[in-house]
Image (cartoon, rainbow, N blue to C red; front, side, top):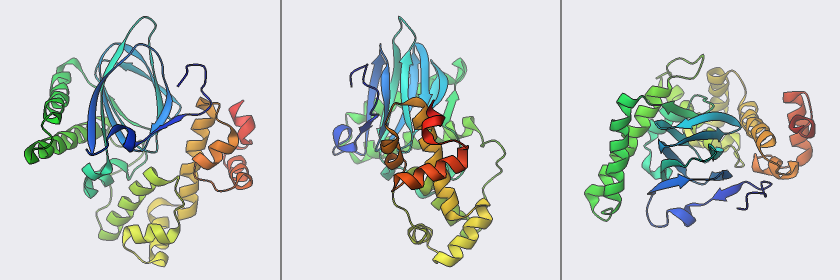
Length: 281
C-alpha cells in the first residue's frame, strides 16, 4: 500500500499467505513503516533485531529485540522502525485449527488490551530456538511428525507468552464449573468474532446451552447482558480505528460489526459522550 494512502487499513487473507498449510513462518526485515492492517489469521511475532514502535489497536508500544506478541483476527496494527534502522522479526501466521479449545479459552476468555511481553537477554535464546525449529520443520511439513512438532512449538510459545503477560488487571483465575467453563470459551470466541452478526441464540449454541439459561449465566459471569458485552467490544474496536486511521466513519461502523450508521452513532455517543466525528478530532 502506498505510504501516503492510509485511509483504508488492508485486510490480509489466509488465501494470500497460507494456501494449503495452516501456518507459515516468515523472517521480515522492515526498513520503513508497515502500514496499519489486520488479518484473517493469527500472527505470533518475535523481534530479533532493531528498534521502533509497534502500534496495536491504537496503543503504541516500544519494539525492540526480545518483543514477543500475538495478534488475533480482531486486532489491527502497524510497525514503524526507528529512523535509519531495520526492524527484523519472525512473523508466524497460523489458523485457529492449531489452537485446541482449552488453550483458546485460556488465551482469550479474559480481556487484555494485547498479548505482548518483553524478554530478557537470558530468556531470549529459548524462544528464538522455538522459532528456528519451526523454520526448519516448515521445509518438511509434508511429514506427519513435522506437523506435530510445529503445533507443539506454537503451543509452547503461546503458553510462554500468556505466562509472561500475566493475568489482566483486576482479573482472577477463571472459574472451573462446567457451565462457567463453556461461557468462558464463548467469551473467547466473541472477542475474536465480534464483527460478525452474532445473535444470542448463536452464542448459546457455541456454549452448548439453551438461550435463556445462557443469557442468565452470561450476565452472572460478566456483570452485563450479552448484547451489552458484544456492543462494547465493537465500540472499543471502533474507537481504536477512529484514533489510528482516516478510514471513513461509515466504513468504521461496518468494520466494527454494526449494521446501521444511526445505531452506531447513538451507541458511540452514549458510551464515549461525543459522536464519532468529535472523538476522532
